[in-house]
Image (tube, rainbow, N blue to C red; front, side):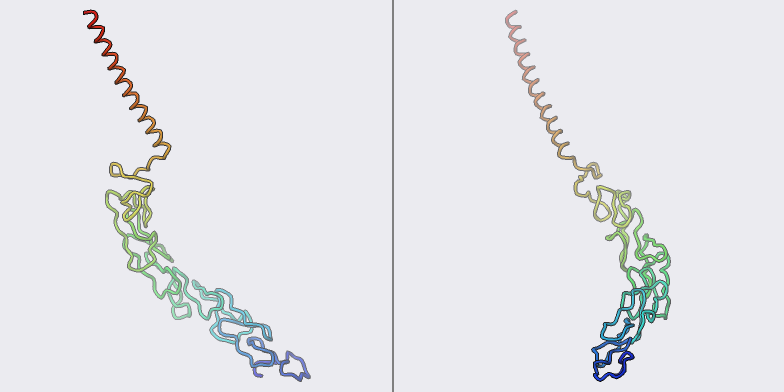
Amino acid sequence: PTNSATGGATGSTAVTACVAAAGYTGPDGGTPSACPAGTFKAATGTAVCDLCPASTFKGSQAQDAASDCDGCPANSNSAAGSTTCSCAAGFSGDAEGNQPCAACQENTFAAAPSAAACTACPDNAPAVNASTACRCLAQYWSEDNYITTAGAYCVQCSSDYSKQCRGGNTCVTGYTGVGCATCATGYYTISGSCAACPEPAEIAVFYMVLAALCFGIIFWTFRLADIQSKNEVLTLLFM
C-alpha cells in the first residue's frame, strides 16, 4: 500500500510484510495514516506517533524525525504535541509570526498566555515590564492580593486604617477585611485599635488575682468591723 514498504526485504509473498513508513503508522499490510500535525515518527511499522516536545510545534503532518519539530519563537512556548506556540504570560502578540511576542510595558500586564494585547493596570497599582499582574500600593486595598483581570481597582484605605493597609489585600497583623478596617479572629477592638485577645492562662491568672483581692477586701471589712465592735465594748466598760 501507499506509504509502506517491506523495509528492504525481497521475495515477500504476504501483504503483511509491508509496514508503515516513517512519518506514518498503521497495521502491517494495511493502509498507513500520516502522523498528525504536532507529532512525528522516526521508525517504520505499527508504532504510534510521538509528540513534538514542549516548546516546539509543527503545523504539518507526516513528519519523520524529532528535528522536524520547530522551536517556538522568543517569549513564547507550547505544550507537547502542539501545532502552534503561544506568547508567554507577561507578553503579547502572535507567536505564529504575524506579531512577535513583546513584553508588556510598565503598568500593564498579561496574566495568561496567548494575550493579543496587554491590559492596563488600575490607578495606584504599578507593574514592571513583562508583568503577569499588578498590585495595589500601600494604603490601598484590593479584593485579591494581585490584580489579574481587567476592571479590578484599588480602594484607598480610610485615614484611620491607612497604616494597616500594606498593599493588595495584605493587612498588618490583627486586621482584616475591606480596607483592613476589621479586627481579625483572635483580636478585639480597644480604643479604636485591634489588640490580641488574652491567652487562657492569662485569663486564669487574672481571675485568680481578682478573687484573692475580693477575698482580702471581704476579710478586712469584717476584721475591721470586729475590731471596732470590741473597742466600743471596752469604751462602755471603762466609762
